[in-house]
Amino acid sequence: MIINTIEQFESFIKPLYRTFSVEKITREDVQNWILGPETYRHQSNGFFSIIGIENLETKKEEIMLFQPQHGITGLIISKHNNSEYFLLQARGEPGYINGIQVGPTVQATPANYLKFHHGKSSRYIEYFIQSMPDSEIIDESTQMDFGGKYLYKNKRQIIVELKTMLETTDIYFWIKKSVIIELLKQDFTLNADLLSLLSKYFSLTSVLLTGDTQQVGKLFRDMYLLNTKSSKHKYQLKALHSFDNLNVSDDGVFEKVSHQELSIEFFHVKTTGRENNDWTQPLLRSKSHGLVIMLTYMKDDKRYFKIKMDTEFGLTHKYGIFPSFVAYPGDHSVKELVIKTLSRNSPYHEVSLLKVSDEGGRFYHDYSDYSLIEMSEQPILNLEDHEYWVSKDELSFLLSFSNLCSIQLRVISALIFGLY
Image (tube, rainbow, N blue to C red; front, side, top):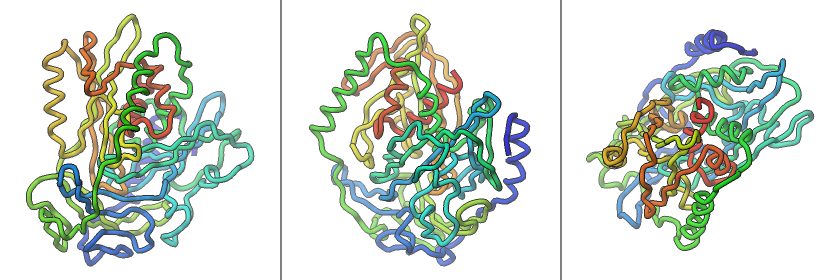
């Protein structure tokens, strides 16, 4: 299947919605999972686990995800009739709004492609784990995942270029680059892993850094000093069922008093074209959505973006680079900070870019609003908060590194590079 227009894409994707179903179930209906009281984990010890931790710095109890294996997200590209095409999949996940969203060629944990579930191996995985004829790896990196939700999770990101286009079946299809650009405007269509890969793809075509790179140099010096002078966040594991604030029932695990604003619930999934087409699993479910904002302004016909260095509990290296503002579902303090920042600066114009689902195989209907706020002039930086104004080329340069840019920064960069 080769898709050259939005109309062709809609004709391809709409029938697949009917092949997907998800229903909420009770604890006793969950198969192949060991549910507590310490942790919730798959019986194969692959995939992910839901764990409880006590943050020794804040003394708060937190629910987090633990997945020590590095997953692979891979994108295959090829040229056809002088145009670039991407090999993608219409991926069904229980947590996606709409049920099915467009993902990269491969989006798999080792448990998937090593067949821990006794299903099929991940399609096209061989192009990302071994040498294949007429293929070339044009970019490979290791990238951090949601550090506010996962404990020390990273993913390998690989982009492969083929000389000829492969045959496709089921949920896989080739799609023209210009159609992907149009889909960047549709909510809940492209998943976060694909957008993360697209940020790397778009940045590969950027020019080399020239001119004043003072902000980038300062950022790297600050990053080095912070990471060498500080240790990782301190925690201890704590049995989920021992949390004072959690109520465990047949329907799931729920907070007694709102803290993280999330619950653990159980689901039965049926889909098509996956390694396994029928399964049950737990998912985290938030009560509200997240917010990701990038401030920007123009000067001398050049666009600048405000980024910041920050920490999240689950990051491998403690510090990473983020957009101007990031609020996870349930985090209302950041939203108040946004209002304060904008109220004391110049006039602005907000552009809503996209609503993007968080990882659909781990979170039920969790998503974030990604927005760009255009300032009429450069707002003052708060140097104590490690804020930096960078150009588009400088942002592309930062995206070229492993484990430096947060997934929120990579997603919003794909939207900025694709649409502006």
